[in-house]
Length: 331
Image (cartoon, helix red, strand yellow):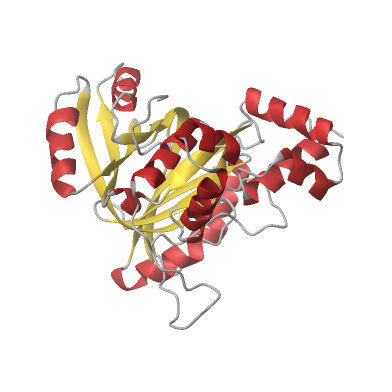
């Protein structure tokens, strides 16, 4: 049976479910898990990729690559300059997300920098020289409490985590893992996966001139350390989500952590960040319609202790959404 909303049938959705737990999962593994013919899975996955229902990606924990400062910047533009400002922001290497929106801001961007000095240079040189920018507000991110790429409910736990990684308990054999600094081989693997996140291990080995087992062991270590996650970035509209929203939340100081932890439990919320600036918490969420959004604001926001006020900015257009934090020849 095919959904009238998404144009996807039950097998399509099951494939997406399987990939939510591991974006590099092979066609053979998916076919076995679903008990569906391998050729059917291959054809359906090709359509999901070709029609951009999903986009495989490699998500790298930014501090592992030397990025210790991230910021969400709300931009007000002159009349008629919204698109040109958004396009200018999208062309910049440090800017990874660019959204055109309704509400307090006309454009919202998310950026990564090695340190706060580089953020200062960006604000003064890039933002300051962009025609049409008439005002900015900067929210420096202090702690990311949730990042989730799961839009469809599944039997698998969401691909979400607290970026302030907890250290394993001493002596815990199941999770104790000595962290290893990234070397040139690790960085080369990440660059290749940025170009094609689903390319097979054997293809990576050929490209990099290394043994397949070396690549496999490196990938496992990077995954086990929490440095790299193979994900799928879904197209929200294609999967039936018609409303994408950025929310700024002001919270009583003593309630910030508790509020962030409570709000991250919502399946509709895919990013929760504690920040400085106008807001104490920034949320990013996907909703099937405005009624579902209203329900979230009444139920989840309205019943969260400590919230003083909130503002919602409806995302009208995604100009850029990039998880490629390293320069690569294909980008």
